[in-house]
Length: 102
Image (cartoon, rainbow, N blue to C red):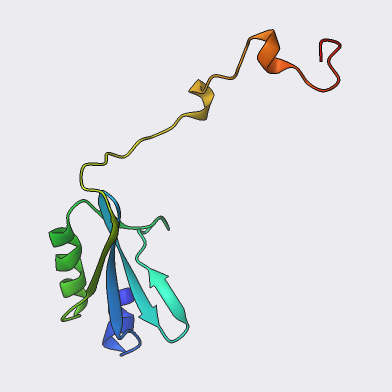
């Protein structure tokens, strides 16, 4: 979709934005910014700046702005499983305001 918009002249600026240790691409259009997505509708990301830049070049854009404000190259992605989070189990930590022990 972005390639067709670039060819039609609807996209003038592209930003490569760092977030943690990954990069994503955002295109500015007259109707607002559009983030590059996968076919499944998720934000498309790259591990390296070089890979993101090659993808932008393949769109037909000669250049892009790079935003490294939130770049943390040493950060690894952390997946959190909410089923494995532990809740307090001690009575003193579990009291509600209706508890007779309050």
